[in-house]
Image (cartoon, rainbow, N blue to C red):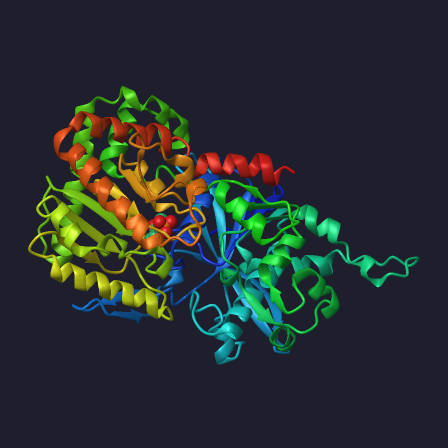
Length: 574
Ligand SMILES: *Cc1c(COP(=O)(O)O)cnc(C)c1O
């Protein structure tokens, strides 16, 4: 590990896929992720390591993390910097590159973390860091806060990630066969490549032809994750000129990234040979948002080994040996005896109940139907849809339901913060009838406890805003069924009454202008009352069959091994 020469020899042995992501969840205690995007990046790398793909990853240091969430007794969120010590986990490399920001050289160093697989594979992740004495105090902070600060701060971060990242790989003499941009944050890497591939062509009169878009395109893969225009990073050109300077002619930049503002998604769309959305539906939504572009779809998956709890790992090891590196073996889930499956679930549920007791003092019951809901607290996820008709919920669920919530709101997201407080209110109002807990500081460790320890995983996004969603896929690896709005991955994974239940109409039956909240809540209550509660308490056999289907039909497909094999055959080998 400390022998730099042998590490670099290994790194430069063959051309690599260079995977760029603003956030990566490599480890629960390394707080360089905020939610689904970062966890997906981590799962991508974990599967690449298992499959021994020739890949390296580049991200930002985020030395002060996203943040640690503290909730008071009313659900009011306070954020604390999640300061961590890189030296505890990674190795500082002796390489330096610089990027020009506001006319000054900003120096960038890199830390190396290896994601190591049980198969012997390993993927290096480079964490870019501007915290160097040779930088100004302000510039030392560029890689401090994930998604912190204002637009100018974000722009500087993306310059370090995209341009600094390409330069760092070049400095290390790593040969890159494809650049894979996980979301538009890294699109500036394209400008660095454009400069590299600029060709002097003397006998042409058109100046634009010296820019070799084709060579850049052939090298690049872009995955978009955001189904709304407002979610795409855009920077005003005057800010770009002031911060980045005219590293390529402004007219060219406007041609590639939009006339009004520099749109990072558009830049990536124009300079990537292969572009994809993260679920079939999201691919279509993206095509409508950007007509004229060829946009494919590779539906996300989760890393099976990381998202299976210990009791299920034991059962899978016994009945489906080899499952972790070949999740297709879940197709034979029927080999696991019913009582073993149920006992594995009870063990995971008991563990979650103990954790809840330890953290909140609330005693939940092993025999009560438990719903789980955990994800970023932001308006479109509608964490409070379940409470739309609180009397009805009380009538249906009194003595029969308990609910566990978790999730952080972005520090600037007032609506998201309000959502958490609303849930605290409902929790108080219902406490004699339905026990509700809200776990603070949601992270990967809590996520695994939750997705494995509840009976039903609830998801209520407002369509079509859930590009994919991945926590529901984690649940299926632990025999937990989804009860979800038909959006993102669930459109592909849902078979009613078989793998789980839908909330609201099928996508093709949506009526424009309808009150989505009222319609979805109505269906939610009806299914809870007439299907889910009766089966849970009255028909254990059907329940266990559905658990098997969650594993055999959902986990079987929605894993990151399948996802990575598709990236290899459809994107990387093009
Ligand atoms: C999986 C995961 C997410 C993503 O959840 P979605 O349901 O896709 O929104 C977010 N945060 C953490 C900590 C996770 O583990």
